[in-house]
Image (cartoon, rainbow, N blue to C red; front, side, top):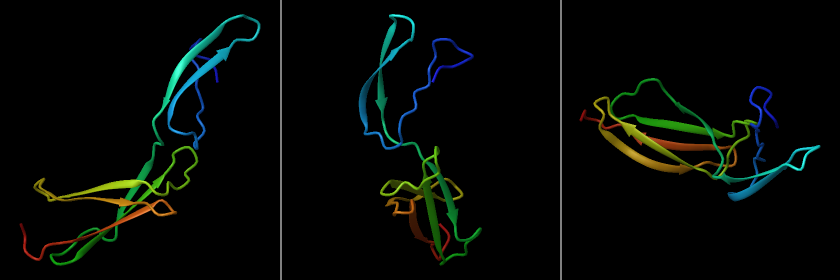
Length: 120
């Protein structure tokens, strides 16, 4: 798709199911013998991630439950079988947990984190 504000600038629409890898793109300009080639790298889907917790605040000894919803920005469809990295830090900045969870068929990954009974 040609840019109306920047001559010679084009937007390449990549299908959401395109295989990862390197591609060569060739564009021909009607009415001329001009052709342009470029290499394009498809590195993977970009995701929007919504993170939510089951509560706003927790008391010592409770279990915090988190869910992350991963979707494709273009069509807001869920991204199944993707690894989500969770990190839990204390108010003082100490890393308490780092874990990975895979999204299900609905694009949701879950994590449970038990809160210590005694403050750190």
